[in-house]
Length: 259
Length: 220
Image 1 (cartoon, each protein chain N blue to C red):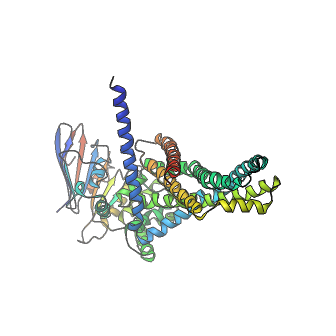
Image 2 (spheres, helix red, strand yellow):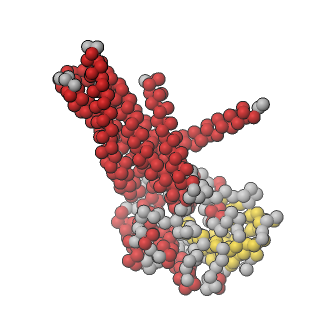
Image 3 (cartoon, rainbow over the protein chains, first blue to last red):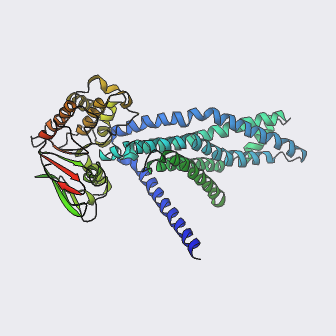
């Protein structure tokens, strides 16, 4: 009779323990920059730029295509439907709330998780399995300094940067969709800008930053947790993606609930 | 003075001590606790020390050190891990420079200067620009040794350092590791753990312990 309760209790205990370990890893990573020597910072910056190249710049075409298609489809439909109801002023609210504030950060984070989250987790897991992480530790080098910090920073910069690209492209594609559906460009800008406040911009950037923190830390943590052997590498990559996605969605829900 | 002192290590049903005096070269071969790398891991605080046992390295109880102090302590000890542990995305020279960049306040020029000296000591030559995957086992091992020697440590611990090397290369490697100048002016202390040793190496060591079937045999 008590077996299901025991199992549930063990599951919850395990999840809380893992959550605590992840939180400690996050705090350690945040504080690691202060203890990095000058030359180490130079190397970490170089690795960070390489990571930004792969994580952000190479993902721009995908973000542009997704943002364009999504925004074009939504705004085309919205202009037609809202036009029939003579309620096109709500187009701005739809654009700002649905696309700029919600879908922009969310889809950008998902793109970075699927492209780079897997890569980061697999790379660090391979480093661990190959004994490279143990060697770094044995030489007195904190693996967080060399392996985690640059990837964490790059994920943060990339999610925020790509989110801005996504939102700008979505606004432009919305303009194309609106004008294609007989809405004047001036009217489009009027309704969108009327709905877009400084608070919205700040909130969207904050959301992108929080998603970036999640996408930056979770894959690294899963990559470095590998212990047994090469068969754990794909498992680590898969777990990193799942946990990152769940984390991003929970954070998005918390933003809606509390802010 | 003792460089490493393992006390009350579990060996089968009994417990054993292993002592590595300063300026000596000591090896432990065979089926050691936790695998061949286990003793080295314990000496560096990488692996947990069994209950009831104690490990003192350069006078420090490594199990009592906090993480930051432990990292600083490890920089006082040269470490050649099993399988070399070189970062595959860096050249051999960049691998050697890594501890200097991330573990010292040295400037870029000072690092370049130190790197030149260490690469010359291990005679890595033109191979320094190769990635580990493009280098042969001898070059990779020399790079791993160079990386262990960058801080000119008084003590070097090595896990299976001679695997895949010819007897002559192994002997040269050992002499390179032992030969550097240290603060006291003597030879470096070397602690080697491996499943076996090449014949040319044994006469060069002050002590060889053998672990088999849970029994430690000194001067095997």
